[in-house]
Amino acid sequence: MCGIFGIIANDNVNLKHLSILAKNARQRGKDSSGFLEYDGSKYSISKFDYDLKKSIKNLNKKNKIVIGHSRLVTNSMADNQPIFKHDMCLIHNGIVVNFEELFIKFGLKQDLKIDTEIIIELFNYFYNQNKDIKNTVISILSHIEGSASCVIHLKKIGKLILFTNNGSLYWGHKNKNTYISSESFSLKKINCDYIEKVINTIIIDIPSCDKKTSI
Image (cartoon, rainbow, N blue to C red; front, side, top):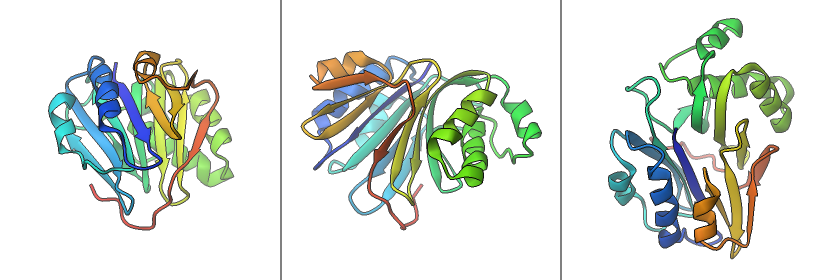
């Protein structure tokens, strides 16, 4: 089990709210952690081989977007999240049990040992065929076996995509800000005006960027 959380802010990310989301996510996994950040100019990815409680102190204090991950290792101690490949960023909670078979079936290149890599590879494979985000997600979920709650960032077209096949992903709104969490509890604690379990694919518009993502 892993924790996903995030804030897409109208101005700067509310650090108190981020701390509430992170505290809840940390209870779902303490082996490693990582972040996707946007400071208003460029996107950056950071990964840490330690607990979220410590790594969150490394964040830029004036971010416009933060998506975080707190990991419980299920396979591959070497590969942490977010995964960045094909100019896309992926954060995943769950485990794909047939990932090795899918790499072979679709002739995809496996660079990592973590099962999460197959999701970003399948997204790239299907999206390049149809250029339709929702159909791409449907194709992914129809082929994987196991559980997947995901946030995918498509930097060039300015989209953040939420989807899940196990219901362990929520989103909410407060003061024109969007909040993401693996559990509804932390969103209620922030007093979001609107909280919804992710059922169908959610596509959120965020700033596009041509600058190279720093890792």
